[in-house]
Image 1 (cartoon, rainbow, N blue to C red):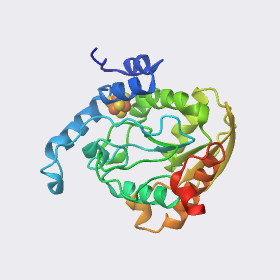
Image 2: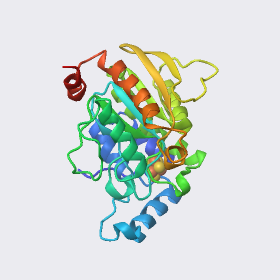
Image 3: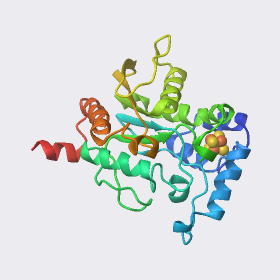
Image 4: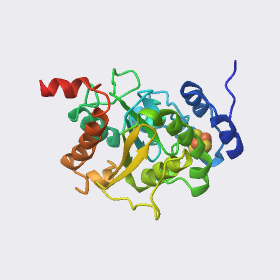
Length: 261
Ligand code: SF4
């Protein structure tokens, strides 16, 4: 059966509703609801960066990736034009991903410290990674309309993985706002006024199975890592905290267990 293609905000909302996780991934990959972003992601895929001239770019939206029943959810902004938009896997093939996966490995949430391409053997443990907006935007800046058009995809994904979640790590204020909106949309009581984003800020929430903690983390973009605004110890502290929160529900992190023995 062919996968339906969303071509409007209403189409996204219709197709996200009641989709299973695998259906969601398929439908996200075919989405064409934002004309500006469709044009940009495909232009970048055609023109390419010189260093990747011999590669075939993915050039499509990027679905969530990782565990199907995570206890830790990581929410980023949007795919990078020559990163995930090239490789087809979230945070894979760019400097932000280099930082993120190296840290996930150090805290025991990934089996290897690098994320180079979609078939590189990378695994994450009890963790799922999503982007709030699923297509690479020009200058990494989706418009509010594009953000809202894309929201049903992440809202549905959050609703599907919510039962086992213990920690939601928000990379940057955009991810923070998106996570709060999605959690509210699936019935989680979010404080009013909404808590402000900050690095290492924690907001205790109540999920369907108990405690659920929202964690703020500076985005591992070069703008933050080159300037020292975000250091490796700072990133490890937040992701390590998420690993501890996640690990408190189900011991499923082989690296972490190995380190303790
Ligand atoms: S940003 Fe989201 S809604 Fe817009 S085209 Fe991409 S996947 Fe579809």
